[in-house]
Length: 150
Image 1 (cartoon, rainbow, N blue to C red):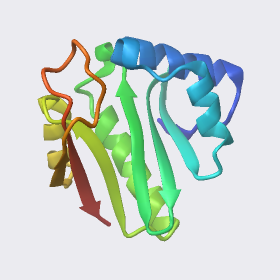
Image 2 (tube, one colour):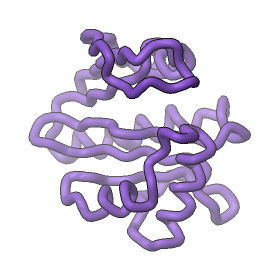
Image 3 (cartoon, rainbow, N blue to C red):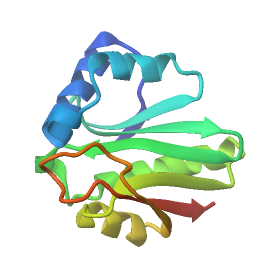
């Protein structure tokens, strides 16, 4: 079940745990997550199973655009449709907020994520060279900008 995530330190710590497992050294910190809650444009939604958050998405609503900042699902809960449901929830929310499109960036080498976004109707709108910091996870620092018209 996907819910809008209200601020609590317990929620922030659960999200930070997902971040660390999914993104390692590139994970958002507790401070980053608190900052998103304090940002009036940011909204967080999560899939809850057995009382714990197993996946989440952060979106910023800016005028006619919904910018998907982060989406993460614990590895043991992947391939169960959670990320697809999180994206659909964001898109539905964005439409209600008057957005015309959703946009995100994804590492060009993250083929699983790129395929997920394509399956959900996102198109590659361009490439942003050296968008990410150098990491051991991917051979490139480049990002695709992907867009879905709502």
